[in-house]
Image 1 (cartoon, rainbow, N blue to C red):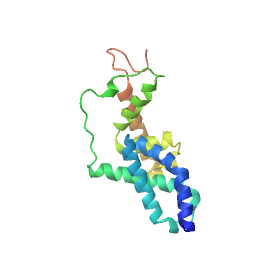
Image 2: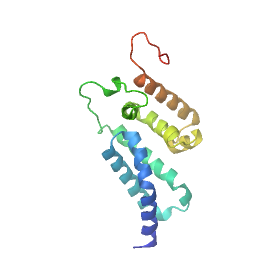
Image 3: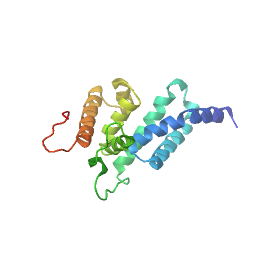
Image 4: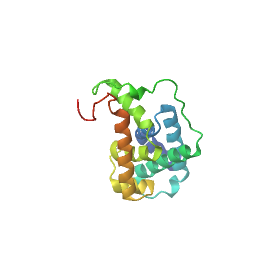
Amino acid sequence: MSDRDKAFDEYFAARSDAMRGTAYLLCGDWHRAEDLVQTAFVKLYRVWNRISRHEVLDSYVRQILIRTFLDERRRGWWRRERVGVDSTEQMAAPDSPESRLVLLQALASVAPRQRAVLVLRYWEDLSIEDVAALLECSEGTVKSQAARGLDTLRGLLAPTHTGTEMGKR
């Protein structure tokens, strides 16, 4: 095994789980997340010899992951069918284990670009500037996409009681 392959193997072993978690938050499906991570690391491997700044690899792989996710969503082949009652309508207690699942299902209902911003800003804890650089957009776009995404999540997660305003209990 060459030094190139060893270095790549070490990086993959160290970072693939974290990238898989990010991919899962983007797509909401572990199998799809595996595919996204695999695609991202294949693309990384192809240019591994040309990368001179290994301290920014996480950012680079994250960018590949986000672009791959958004590209696949644009193509339209990835569709989800909803049968029966939407489970986000059945609210769980705030501290219950089910609340995490409800949140993940609601996140999957957010538009892909907004979801990417939410995952990068609040899960990956990246700054507005870093998210804008990764998504190749303005900082204002990141802010507006985050605000719209959060509004969508609030709407999906808000109690649907008649006469109850959000925030009042």
